[in-house]
Length: 136
Image 1 (cartoon, helix red, strand yellow):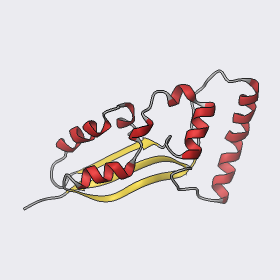
Image 2 (image 1 turned 60 degrees about the vertical axis):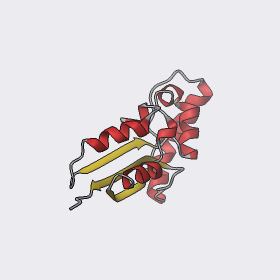
Image 3 (image 1 turned 90 degrees about the vertical axis):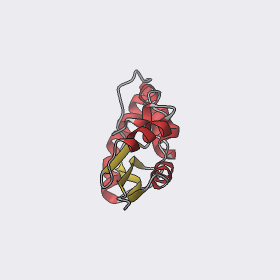
Image 4 (image 1 turned 45 degrees about the vertical axis):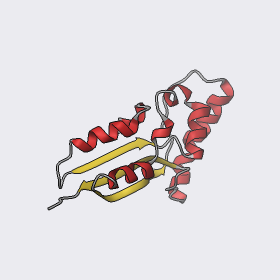
């Protein structure tokens, strides 16, 4: 969970994961979704230190899906998951940003109750779930 998001060569890391899965075995890959427009803006504005620890380019479940399909995996799920949620670390923010973050932290749960924001822009995570095909 979140492992590949710390590597520039994340496709090589996925390839290494693929070699560990036996036919009939399952592979689950997840990362935070800092690549979505809204999520990226929130982290860039309020959580830069945390954002700097991740490779945003790795947060591409469609690319993971293609790589797994090319390696004889059946895809059970691929895409963005989780409702609109903003998790963040603790940074030294200006007074204005602290007040804005306080408001964001209070608004998001309420918005999630009104509408489920499962999309590339809003979802907190992305994932792929796949099973390695048994080839006779």
